Structures are given as C-alpha cells and as structure tokens.
Length: 617
Image (cartoon, rainbow, N blue to C red; front, side):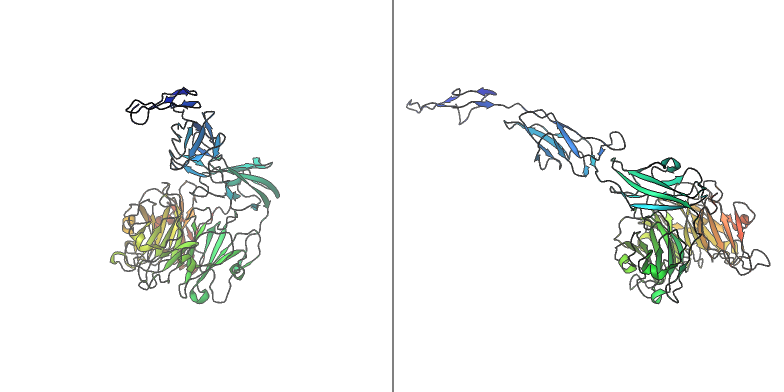
C-alpha cells in the first residue's frame, strides 16, 4: 500500500477477507489484521423519489389545493427520507410515505424531497417545478344567517340578497368565490355565481317565506354555507330619522351608505354639521324593515347604527357625506365624511379634511381623530390654506379600473394656476392600506390619483362632485363636476357641469380640455343666473340604452313667466363622444329631458340624485 489508505471496490467482504500487515526495513513482519465481520461497500446512488398531491382547485392543473398532504413515491425499502419546504436550506426527516404542508404558497423549488440508504448514499432531490398553493380555510360569510324581506310584486330584477364572504387570499371580497344555491326552494331563485346576488326568477304575488342555503366555494374547493329565509310581504313605506339635539341641523347632508355592516340591507348616513360646537357629527343608520322612527340619540348610543364624531370644534364635519363604495376591498361598504373648515396643519388653516371610514358591523362610536391616526380608515388632507376641501365628497366608482372603488373630493374655494376661485376636484384612487394619510398635494402631483382643475376664475368648480357610472360605455366609471357660477357663452352664472371620463393615469385634467371635447364633455347652462350644476348626480340608465345617464339641477332657473325660480332639473342621456351639451337642447327633448319646478321660488333642483328603480319597470 501507499500512503495510509486504499480503496475497496463495491461489493461484500466477508470475515477475514480483508487482511492488512506491515513490514519494517529489517524485514520484520507484523501479525495480520483481519476484518472480523462482513463489510459491505455500496456506492450506487439512490433513485430520486417522486411526490404527488391532490389538486382540488376550480381549474384543471391550477396547482391549488385544500389538502396539504404530499405523498412520496419511489422510496427504497431500507432507506430513510427527508423533505424541505424552504428550498433545501433545512431538511426534516419524514415518516411513513407522506407529510403535511401548512397553508401558504410554495414557490418553485421550495419543496424538495430526497432519500438516504443505509450506506449513506443520498439521492438527488425532487422539487416542485411551479408554485403550489395550499388553502384549507373555508370562506367566511359576514353574517351567520338572515331573514330578508321582499316586497310583494317586486320586479324580478330586484336584488333580494347580496351574499359576501371574507376573502382570505386577498383581493376583493368576492374574488375567487363561486356562489350557488341549494335547498327545496332553490329552483325559485337565480344567483350570480361570481358576485352572490340573489333574485327571484318570477314576480312573487303572495306573501310567504322561502328558506334557501347559499354555498360559497373558493378556488381551492373550500366551501361554506349560509341559510337565509326570504320573507315576501307587504312592507312599510319608510321611517323618520329624528335629530339628536337642538341646533344640530341634522339632515344637512344625507346619502345612501351602501351595506356598511354586511347584513344584506342598505344603510344611510345623516350629518349634523352644527353638532358639538360645529365639530359636527354624522350618523350611520343601519337598514331595517320596520317603520319605527329612528332617534339619532339612539344611534349615538350604538343601537341600530353608530355615530361619527367630528375631530375639532368648527371643523364642520358632515358638511358633505357620501357612500364611498368598498375602498379597501374587504366586502363592506365604506363612507366618506367632509370637514371643509378643518385645519390639517398649522400652515394649512381651513384647507379642509375628508375622512374615509371603513365599514364595520358594530355600533361603537367612531372618532374622526382615530381615523386621522390611521385606525379604521384614513384621512385626506387639503392642499392649501382656505381651499375648503371636503365641501363636496362622493364615491367615484372604479375610475381607474383596478377593482377598488375610488373617491372624489371637491375644493371649490381654491385657485388653480392663478385662476381665483376656479376650484379643484381630486380623484383619490382606492387603497387597502388603512394607516397612511393622503395629502391632496400628492394627488395633485399625480400619485395615487389625479387633480381636476377649474376652467375659469370664480367658477367654483368642485361644488358639487359626483360619480355618474359609466356614461361612455368604456368600462371605466366617470365623474361629474359642477361649476354653478360659470358663464357659458357669456351667460352670467348660467352654470356648467363637466363629465370627466374615467382613466387609469395620474395626469392632471383641466376642465378647459373637457370643454373642448377631450376626455369628456361639458354641459352648458341654459339662461343667465340659472346656476345649473348647483347639484349633480348619477341617474342610472334612465332610457335603457346601456349607458349610464346623469341629472343636473338648476335651482334658480325659471320654467315660465309665472314660475320665477321654480327651478329645473335636466336628465342628460349617456353618450360616448365629447360634443358639448347645451341644456336648451335637452329642454327640446334631444339627448334627454327637463323636469320643471312646480311653483315660483320652489328652487327645485337644489338637490338631485338617482333613485334606483322606483316603479320596478
């Protein structure tokens, strides 16, 4: 031998087969060392094991499963095996022929499995060649069960129930969920599989109850069920909402609130901007089916809704309130409350604030100071001193097409590009981060939204603002900006309204560009001092052409010589082009229709809004 070792070939060496001796320089030979038991030399590499899992996902081979069991195949009978779930950094000894993955995403090569024989030979590792998603969490309905009341003879298009679940994997609440109905009465109903909206297939003309079960299935195949009873009955026509304290001026601004608490009934928001030394209060009144009057003092105590308390005296929170859609994508509708006299910082006196309050199911009071700190919502701070941002606020729909609802905030007292009191409006894109305040100066720079600059001095654009749905049919929601003091074609304060088409980028919009027919269209007031655009709103699809329409109020308009300032409201049909609309044309019945006030000085059109499908046609 040479050195101090030698190599045995692969094989079995029985007792005494291996013998070793040494000889010194004098020729003396040592006794022989022998192996006293069999030695086996095995250098043959093991085969690479394989593994399988059960793909329960809604699509073939989507590698999504609600069963975390990984079954290992191809193990040698005398081998041990190990697995890693962190890309081979750490290995764990396996037992039997399987192991369990916890919920999570396992990216390419994260899962590695190898085996080791008795000789210590280690196989190469088998790996996952693409991401495997394990999700064993069942969808969670927002409420455990409900009785849903439906009016006799309601149209078949009436939404009876909107099933919604918590989405554990991110995205909007309904994303990745498939809905179905089961039960003895299931055949009476239809359900949209991707949104969970339940309707009757035929008009119900007799009072009765139908019990059904709604099934929500996620992309991994996990299922949850919710049982509801649909009660068809004659319903009361409404209820009164009584203010809390003298001098509160409750009802100064009111709005639909969407379904804030997720019980399947739409809710309301009612403001009282003079409350608490003009700090202001807003009250969320949960939807209900009885006709019992609501006292806002009861709401303030946490029964039947919750109160939103203003941050500081003289902020005038609740000057404008609105539903906000589902800004953070949790499946509950959110709210926006304007406080146009609020001061965001020492250098921005009365720049204004707007507060986004996330939907919630309990009646605990909300303090806007808490929202401003990033808990339960977020604050939107005005740009400059005396801008009065938040004097008008509204949901904006999904303007940029990212799946999150957006907002619009008016600041009619600001002076863009040196145009005194031309006004600005800010579109704030929806976001899921509920901790970071938004500064409208950031929006004006094109980050997180975009600014809409008024056209001319003293127009007061941004008072009011509103979503209008998809007016031009491009799939993005559009906006309407009122400028009631604008002077179209020299008609002093006839007013203008601007429809701004939805877009995904943050580039600023100048209303002068909209007036030229690019990116939207202008609606010009009819006569001097009409103040058209004092109130604006979406109107739904009034004429059934598939495009959303809008309504413009002109509260100072005079329909006839005997009806001075009776007011007018103009329904303008949706359209895809940028041609200007003159309200005088609408009066003639082209492109819409006019609604004339009843009596002199009624000022109809002071407030306008969509009303849904009132007559069920």
